[in-house]
Image (cartoon, rainbow, N blue to C red; front, side, top):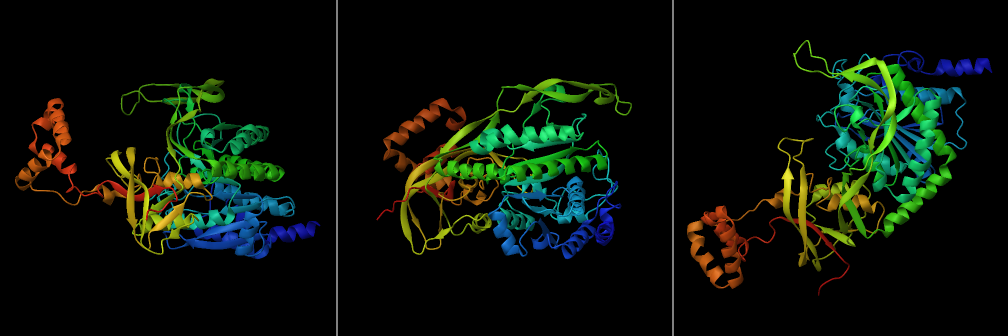
Amino acid sequence: MKQTLFCLLFALPVVLFGQFRGNTTPDYDELISVYKTLASKHNEIELYAMGDSDAGLPIYLCVLNGAGDSIQTFEKAQNSTTILINNAIHPGEPDGVNACLNGIYEWIKRGKVTKGMPVIGIIPAYNVGGMLNRSGTSRANQDGPEEYGFRGNSQNLDLNRDFVKMDSKNMFTFAKIFHGMDPDVFLDTHVSNGADYQYTMTYIASLRERMAPALADLVYGEMIPHLEKKSKESGYPLIPYVETKGETPESGIVAFNDLPRYAMGYASMKNSISFTLETHMLKPFPKRVKATEIFIKEAILWTAVNAEAIEKARNEARDWEKSLEKFTYNYQLADKKDSILFKGYEFSKPLSELTGTERLKYHQDKPYEKYIPWYRTYVPKDTSHIPDFYVIGGQCTKVLERLKANNFELIELKSDTTIQLGKRRIQFYETTKSPYEGHYLHSAIASELELAVVKFRKGDIIVPTAQKNKRFLVSLLEADTPDSYFAWNFFDSYLQQKEYFSPYVFEDKALEIVEKNPALQVALDTMKETDQEFRESSWRQLYYIYTQSDYYEPTHNILPVFEGMYRQVE
């Protein structure tokens, strides 16, 4: 037995036993070499190049307890309880990279038991471009490892903001992996910046208010208490992610709003149990790796034991989602606060020797344990009725490409068709003054749905809402949602007016228009009486008359995404 174990251990890559178990983490080539060696030596370990990254190198998926080839493995994953772990979305935060290697080593050492085990998928390195951009200085506040990758990818995108807009090749590959695995549990590994405190591991769970009730009850009622108990027993107690309401934790911590732009928000909107693992930057790298190992191990064990309950809750979640007639969104943090027992450090604000102003200083030699405010209740600001279907202009190729990548059913019109439905007019929006992840993101969006008879052309696309992941679909296509395609600038060209008028020519025509429309004259007079700027601006008055006339282009501020019931107008 000892000889067999010795041969097995000797056959494993050296990196699993020393080089990357201290204060180092592998680069991309070293990491993939390890996984290729593991897959070549163990039938229970599979490795697949799943698609391109923006760096021109593949994104791999490692599967433990698969079925032998990618098609069969995906079929098994979709019919089994499945966990997907995503590593190095921020390659400067490589704790999950090492933790998964160490976990695989432990699994091999214990005999590679697969009975009762979930299908486990591991993305060894999602942000390949960031992995290639290595240094030991880009994360100034972090304690190790000696070298690591960079947050931005090859396009300098933060890939943890790309799950809706899909600007990267990486995200198209991720969508292929995610829908192939259909994970019941999704874990995304990170390292946190922010306040100082005693915990090595924190976690983000999806907003309870946005989750399907069955999944919310299972996650918050059973899974989180179990993970907290087991992590504490292992010497690495858990706390929710420390996003402070004020400058320090004493002001309270705030539940993170996991919008679908983020990895876990994307997964959660598809009814996967989702967590972001956030180790603490100021803890030594080996301790952070160990805390990540423990969380992942306990999540796997809990999933294995509770597989039946998880599958039941996800089925109930899909049925709940299928029955939804309204979609709630724009969740806002409520004033309500609970309390949570927190292990922190006292702080002071001495004068800085460098700047001569106050600085924040935590005192690790003065730990405390006390209750602090916990703001974890969100309420939806807006609600919209879910249409039976959308119709999207066939010219919207970027939007249609992304819907297709997310496995939505798209039905192409085979002939020109006239349909009575709702067209959405944008009335107001705000836009960031500086770029955000390559976009000028819109917010505070207000729109109005107008009933219209619209002529569609052959090749335009019907998207029924009675399909899997309905909430995610609506969150993309309803303009007012915070991560809609409109918010991410996919329809900005429809906000620009293409035709105008010359005032000296239009003046006489405007007079004719007003004389023929007494109601318009009343509205014009009222606006002149109540708005001094309007009264003193001939352009504004003429433009207002223009917008109320037949000369104003009917498509201005109308999105090419229409909403309706299944009825056709003859």
